[in-house]
Length: 171
Image (cartoon, rainbow, N blue to C red; front, side):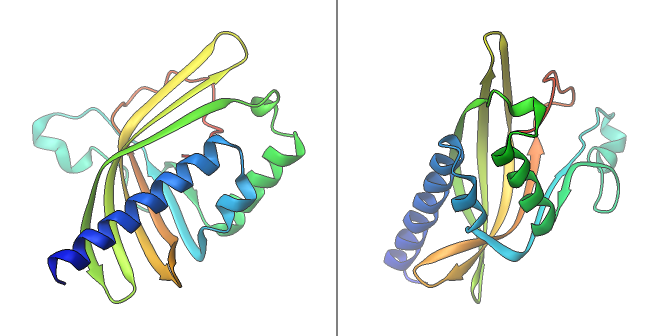
């Protein structure tokens, strides 16, 4: 790719990620579902505190325990629960702010782009609950016309201890 092509692609990817964050903050979950590929894999492994000699065991692996290990059907069920008000942890609904930064394109192969970004998800609920999650994520975006679909999302939290009462917010 030429430099102007790389700059344009980076801009398109950032704008897509920022628009997605705004959708989630506005609780436009149906619109968010439209951004997901049919074969989406949405995964957040569990992080463990380990010694230097055991760093290869810091994260659970695919197929092991995870905070999220969802396909499209599970994500659709989560959205239906949020919309129906049957998710007790989201009634009244949380207020969230998704921050995405340090966006880097790691690979471009055919119609898929692998992107790494830092994230901060702030959530407040009721009058006293506040949660903050920080981390990095690796997304595989698939070209879909003039935009993208999210084919894979892997979320890696910086913290090992989750102080929140629940994790019902979509990352």
